[in-house]
Image 1: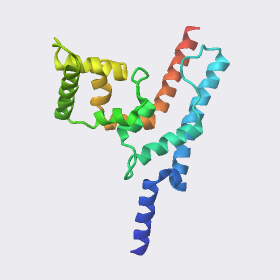
Image 2: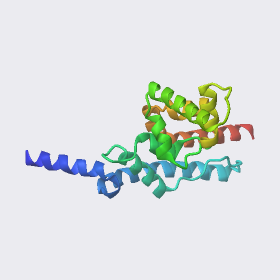
Image 3: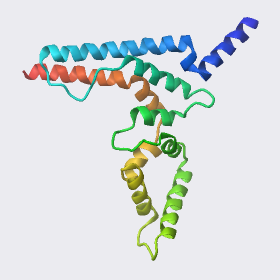
Image 4: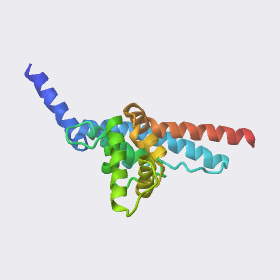
Length: 194
């Protein structure tokens, strides 16, 4: 019984601080090595075949280890929420994520909380502007979001507000492998066309 309790305590400590756990570090290194090696092989193939490069780059193994450990850290008490980790690592380039903790807050909102947020933004804009504003709450929120995050309200909702944890986990863990698979397909198409 004491052995089980010790194992539980050790597992809890590893989840609470995965960056300091030798076992978590080893697991992250294995996944990172697999992904980095696969990507390197595809990039080497591309260079050897004289295929024009696209925007995919070699994976930095150490950076990938850190990304994986950040993901695990998000599941521990006090860790960053999954939505914040996803925003830092996977958000589309056209969304400003310079303040990921603030942006992630909107990913955690219910539909009712989001609608209330839109109303608050609209009310604030109306209060700060002299005269009447002939715009809906949603139009005013769209203006605010465009200024703050550089995208429309529809895009912000699709990417941030409608955040899906299952899709985020897939992006975070399998994203590099999927990009490598796409690079393999691109190489095959380029070779078939030549």
